[in-house]
Structure formats: C-alpha cells, structure tokens
Image (cartoon, rainbow, N blue to C red):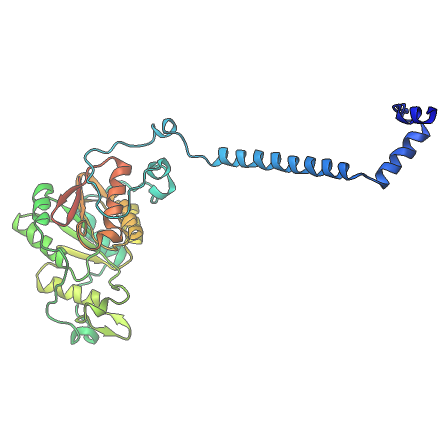
Length: 336
C-alpha cells in the first residue's frame, strides 16, 4: 500500500538546471503522446485561419470603392440627358466620370486659335506642301478610273445640317469622317445659299474599312489602293466646291490632335467616322477641344442600327462626364 500511495502522489516539479528535468524532457520528445500531436495540429490550424482572415480583411479594405461622399465633389451633374435604350448601361462609377481620369484626357491644351481666314492656307502649306490637291487633278493614271460624280453617304441630307448652319453661321466646319463627300458638298451648298464664306475641312484616311467593298462596289482599286480620295476630289470639283472644301487624308485621331496643336478651331463640327465605342469616344473628345465658344458639335447614327456598336454610348457618356445635354434631330445627336 505504501508503494501505491507514492505512485498516486503528484511528482515534484524539478528545477530547470536539474539533470532529471532534461532527461525527462528528452524522453517526452522521443515518445510524444497522441494528445500532444492533436494539440499541435489544432494550434497550427488556428494560426493559419486567423492569418488568412486578416489578409482578406486588408485586401477588402484596399479595394473597396469610394463612398458616395468621397465622389460627390468630382461627379458632374447632367441636365436632361437623353436616356439610352440599348443593352449597354451608362457607366456610373466616379473614376470614369472624373474629367481628370486618363480615359477622359486627350492630348495637351490646344494652341491659341488662329483666324478663320488663314486656315485654308495653313492646311495647304502644312499638309500639301503649298500646292492645292485640286491642282492638275486628276492625274493621268487615275483619270479613266473615276466617274464624273459618285456621291454616296448615309444621313447626309437631313434637316439638321440646314438647322445648325443657319443657327451657327460658321466660318469653319470640321467634318470627322467624310467618305465620298456627300455631307461636305451638301454643307458647302447650304453655306453658299446663305452667303457665307465657310471653309470645310474633311478628315478621313480614305481607306474605307475591311469588307466595305462588299457594300460599295463602285470605288475603283489600283494596285491594292482604294481610290476613295481621288473620287472624293472629283466629286468636289464636279459640284464646284473646291474653294470651300479641303480634305485632310490621315486618321481622325492624329489629324484632330495636329489641328489642336496648330490652333485650327471650328464653329461647327460633325463627328461621323468610326462607329465602335472606342473610335467614337476618341473622336468626340478630341473634336470637342477644337470647338469655338458658342459652337455646336453633332453626329450621325444616334438612332440607327449602329448605335448598339457604341456611338450612342460614347455620346451619352461624354455628355455625362461634362454635364452636357444631348439633343436629337432625326438620326443625329447634337451637343451645344
């Protein structure tokens, strides 16, 4: 009984420097019990769980969108914006609507506007090296390929042209996207009827688009070169508008930027080039920088089958970012 009594008594705690303490500890490490393994497993799992939770909480805090109070000072107010009816909703997040966002900034500030009276000479000197593109036209190698007149356009004779030209009495018009010059020659005739001395600049690379000849088979091709520019010039000459109309045969983005650098501004700007959102968005933003005070910018395909490709979305977003109102005249959108 004496031995049993001593076996049930608690073992006396040995000091750290005692040899028996280290001997016993060594035995425990060599022969751990299942309970010790289980405790170690629980501690490891708990440590990993709390570490992961802390990391997720930090990431959520870093990526959460700003509150409405944070964006109130940078979000413009839109008055009477036309509601879209397509399946692409307008952007509503504050970074997109911020004018200082990179998506809303297009090139540097434009140069001081030059007088309208010298715009034609600026274009002829800087684009055509001092010689009018109509001089000695057509060259022999394309003369027999051209038709005397082949004017083709879409929405080129709507009432919006006469309405806006009568209202703005423009000295300079910029047309972004011109194709064969239907809208340009129509506007030239309207300005003549009103007794205006108006210069019309037509921006287009005159290359068409891949597959356009499936719809337009009357434009000749020579050595892979689509002869849109020669036919455009021929149309302008035939309609006696060469003194009013000058083409600038480069991409719309690069040309609008260069006109900005040259200080070439306009009273009336028509944007009707690329119909996808990115092209329309770039053209609208760049063109607006060239608009004189009191001027008007407008364009086609606001209510056509092309609106779902991006024209209407680009127009509406531009108006929303800048706090403008979008008016509608037939199939055309108008921003004043």
